[in-house]
Image 1 (cartoon, one colour):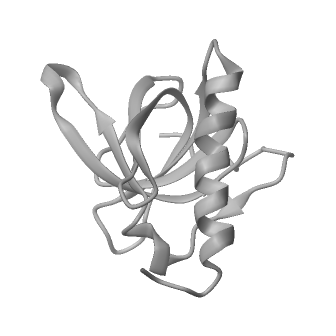
Image 2: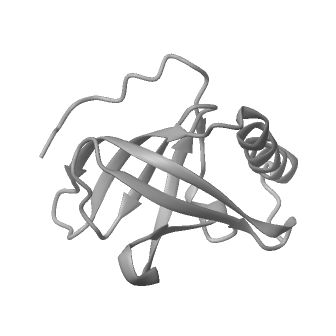
Length: 126
């Protein structure tokens, strides 16, 4: 289990806990099993999530992000795990992952929607 640090040098956008219930994130496993996770922060090329499932370093996982109150389509991305660290006194893990996307325009649209959601709500909840 790698306990490495997040090395993203680009702007990170933290997701306040009050908004996490509106930004849904699921990891897709083998056999179409879904694991619900929480997005802690994101940048254009990386994401940090809290997951009940351990993912080894360098593993690739599929991720589905939903913003049901803002955007009707699920947004999919493939992630490559950079590190997986256990959360103290919990059965969860913090996963730092690089977003693997052959179509950077797609990822730009995904993050534009999330940024729009976070920035436009600035203290307002639905």
